[in-house]
Length: 377
Image (cartoon, rainbow, N blue to C red; front, side, top):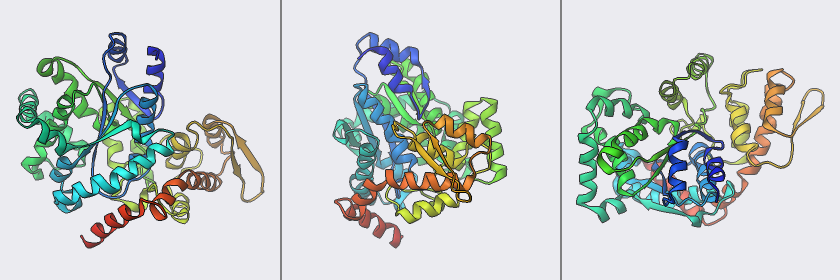
């Protein structure tokens, strides 16, 4: 595949940042084998951000002929006390529900889950042994404590004094994962950029190569308030990516706030209820949670137009692209409630395969297993 085609697939939405296109171009032109990874903590239900947005980029990289890997970070999840801090439970969910949910998400995004490798963190550590420990030490020796603490804010750990020592190991381990697997395309949400920048800076000195860092968009939670929304918009407009990534990480769609997140197997009535209750300021298009779903999910690779019906007059507006919808919404030709109904209808349709898989198909036992764990804790 031509380098320009690889760059186009790599940088198309929901990608927001590639550090750097020049380095990726150089690797392609030199015939370097491109190895990608994206890592996930394993905890509860998979929502639109973890499932569809993340896997859209994995599918793009599949199409670009890049070797893709999903890293199920069981030890990192243990460090952050996910699923009650029980490592055996974390591994069971990682290899069961979580892996299954991401595979279904790849299918919905138009990809082939068999073309992506799923790898448990403990598999890497057991295989490499002392080599992995050495890599963690290399990263730690080349990174200051204050830098690690600043990077930990992406994990939602704002109070540095309350961190366990294990949590201080999180970032050096995350960076060591990249080099231990020979990854040259480190992928994650915008909230992962600080750790990835450390990997780029440490890489050449400690591991003789610099990886490329690819960061995708983070969907905001549905229940933003006006003050928080204004703060986000202002941070975005200032153009400081670290500041904005910290701000959006605080309000991103999260499984810990289930009322503000849409899960890939939500019932149609739950999808509708959550969308109808979402923050959606009239005429405002920046960081509008409902428009974000329209932009990044509904209009992605869409061939047919979207119809929005005015519930009061019955008038129908047809939009062939997201930009048309955005402009009409900005001009207040589309009412927030009418937008919500249209988005809810389309999103429920898109998620139907996941809903069937986890209620009627082979994914049912995995979901029931996870629910039994979370109910009893």
